[in-house]
Image (cartoon, rainbow, N blue to C red; front, top):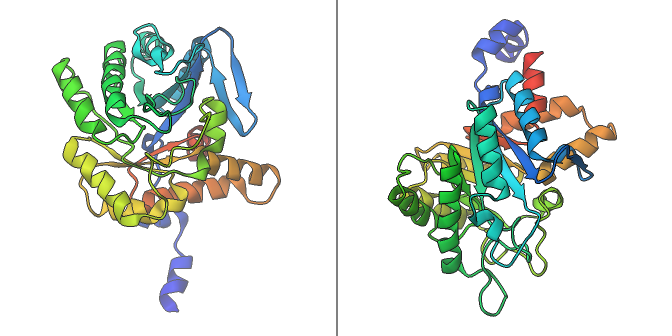
Length: 323
């Protein structure tokens, strides 16, 4: 009783000094969604405050991010034309390659991470080349074009590659391809434990990547499997990943902690679209103290073991940290 009473009387400065878990603007990577055109900044109904933007608007957004102290972004592309193999992601003049070059020219200090996948680029919405029965993704064929996509990103000036398709052997494949092409120092942030989750719905609105048939359960993780989830991340570490990730974050903090306890690598969490939307709409309807719950959620990620937080809340958090 006496100890609890003493703690309540600590002044705010001493509380800050003795706080075990802290949040910094440097913890965050902010997602951006780019499409071709000019003057485009279209808000996504299911994700208030999140936009599809043309490159000129992306450059303005990077400037705003810098004023908030955010210097790390992750790019997702929305091509004009989609096909069965995601060809736009494989060429040097595709939407992502063009955007990387533009950002690096105007904002060279921005740390540009690229999501490496095919769901946004294929006409079927799956994460790679389909098998001959068109029932699921052909793992080995997808590895080959993933290596091509990684080289495109690296040549354009990306600072880090983040493969999100959950193909078996993806990290080893990308590491070999990047090394062979002279990009030995290109870091890989693996979506190492990515669950087949219902929390991704709003993302598929903004990225226009909803599968035209079936789902992605055949190559993403079963949410019920704890041991397998940990093993997936440890396997990616062995293949050469530089950073591991758990996605989604909020319902999987037990997995975050267990992976953190089993690796020395930095660990990221992806605070995904469904998690963001839930808080947004709860706040709009005055069901929660929105800013307080956002910060409490971010603290929860860090306390569980996350070193990096990929979040649509990043700009809001940066502003709150300035107060």
